[in-house]
Image (tube, rainbow, N blue to C red; front, side, top):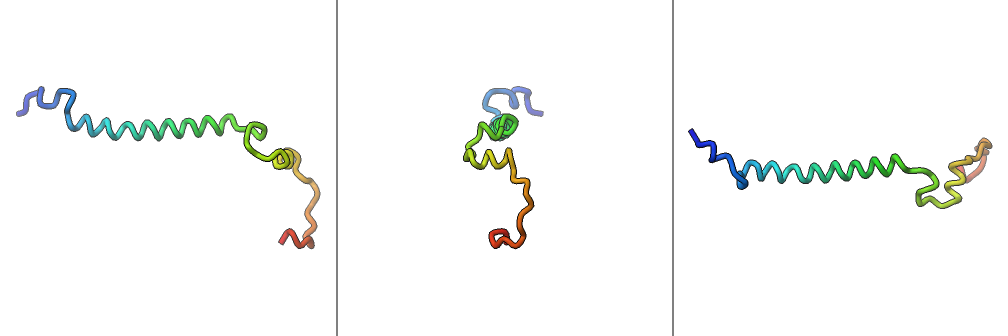
Length: 73
């Protein structure tokens, strides 16, 4: 039976391997959280949309399209 001190200490390979797997996971969680935060605070007014596009989204054309219009095919 191995002594308890065989698994203890700062240079345990199993602990190092586990730690090395945790860091990328933490980075992924941080990236995901920052993405969620950006979506949560997004509005039409604080983005990078052209003002014409923003206005069109806020006030869409309410007229029905003319189906004979060649630009709608």
